[in-house]
Image 1 (spheres, rainbow, N blue to C red):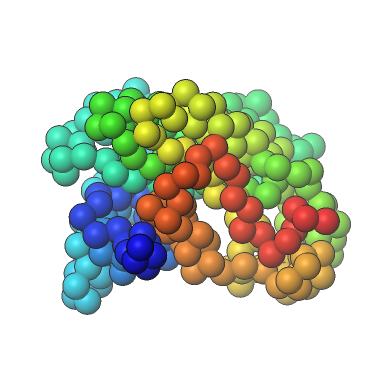
Image 2 (image 1 turned 90 degrees about the vertical axis):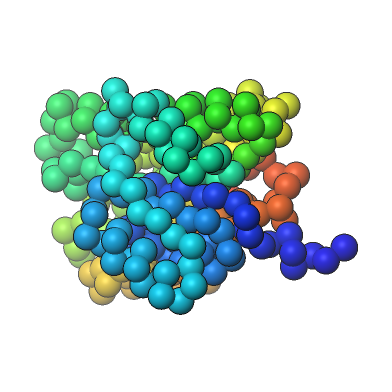
Length: 262
């Protein structure tokens, strides 16, 4: 057994929604380095084309497709087009993070319309995309779907980490991420007999030049005493998608520095 071969993605076609986001960019780079045929799916055409060009210059097999996960009415049609163009879907990663401009409003200021829009854009899009992708993978007799959850889809919020800042965590975020996690379990159970694996990656707090007070508050509540990096999330995602994880489905992989362990 050549174990390192199990981590190779050579010959596999991988679709990444939100592929030019904070996490998506590193996930795209990781799969490109692992020799996958990567298709970046994002609404940011400028960033998508630049990342594609940069990775092609170093030998990556990467393409960009403008793709809006919130266009629910056309999800099935748009995924069929992708499948027709690229042949098959070996791996699909839902890493997009759609949200409204008032997403970060406090609970007291939350409007029903905003709540509904965010649930539609994030939870409902993940759900409908996942359903369609799994049905395609069923026909292919295999595939790996990875959805992105969060620590706050698993445990309650620690609002103390926001003290001394204007930051907060939206109520919708907890509901959406919790829903995505159990959606993945449902699909893993339903499609397992067709050799379709469905798992969830749950990042903890990822450093992105946030308020220094927040970073300090967050870090001291984490066993590893720091925030995570996009590269650490990308590595975990690559593992779950690879043949190294061939007997893993229905799990919620916490990549959180130990946050949910205490």
